[in-house]
Length: 401
Image 1 (cartoon, one colour):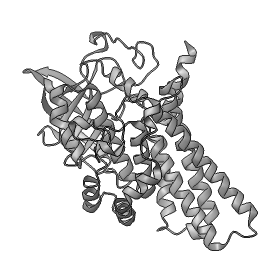
Image 2 (cartoon, helix red, strand yellow):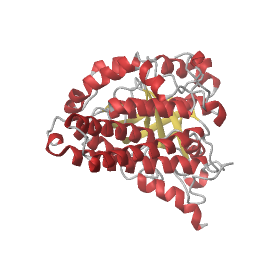
Image 3 (tube, helix red, strand yellow):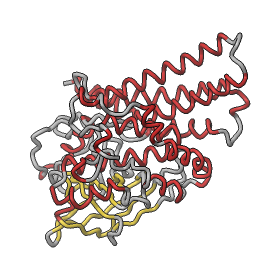
């Protein structure tokens, strides 16, 4: 996608965001790609892995550069655009949507925090589809807020050595670049943060003191990715494990301030990008299936059924409006709006898919019906970071101060 498409840069004003293509334009532009995803999604879900055809289509779709600045070969799109694209892809295959969301997240962090050398090295490849990016933050025992990491980074020979294991890494095994979060210093040695919100110092946030982000390429001999997690939903998202064993990286792999990753994490919330977009896409797809089924059966004289469908469409519209507001960053507290959007949209998504299943009755109880995959995928969104309970905690903790 070219910058001439009218896409805006990260940091653009709310007014400028209005020039991002509307959903109908995006749906028409990527219709062939979306059709490919829909065709391959059932087999991918059954296999529990993204097929090569899906990955080839994603790499060639032109979508991967949306969050990369135009100067590095991307579209320079803001969160309004990336949220809309993620939502659109989720209507066809939610698993691919979360792969895309994570790719955008890493691309945006490099654009925001990367050195000129890091941007020049990685952003062009992330923009043209030759590379995919993944976030490796979660690990067993770390907690939803990532405060108790076991993965360690130790200074050695002018660089760092990383050791630890990451879980629930979306894109494991298919990404060429991983954004790894590791404990690089005890809390007492952490660099003082100019922006303490989100750190352990005030007990209100996500991430802990003394943590650092590292950009690790997949061919590093100290990194092993395993997609062996057998998930209930989002089965084709290549979500798995990343093991780091004496993984050596140079100083140039550090993204953002060493020992102060909480500043980077706090900026994620303010960016307006939200997993609520995935939830809206799933809810929209479920609503469409319910409506199409009802229309085939006939809606004349079925006032109660029509009204239930209207309620579903209203829920989807409300969630979408909050996701759009998150992307525009036009509220008094954009970070809270982003958390609200993820929370509300994921709840709406589960409600809409469940009601759609009830509306279809026995017709939707067949194992191969796409509505059942959507329902399984819907549950997953609330569990993704920040989990819904952590969203509630992040919003409400400041009230106690």
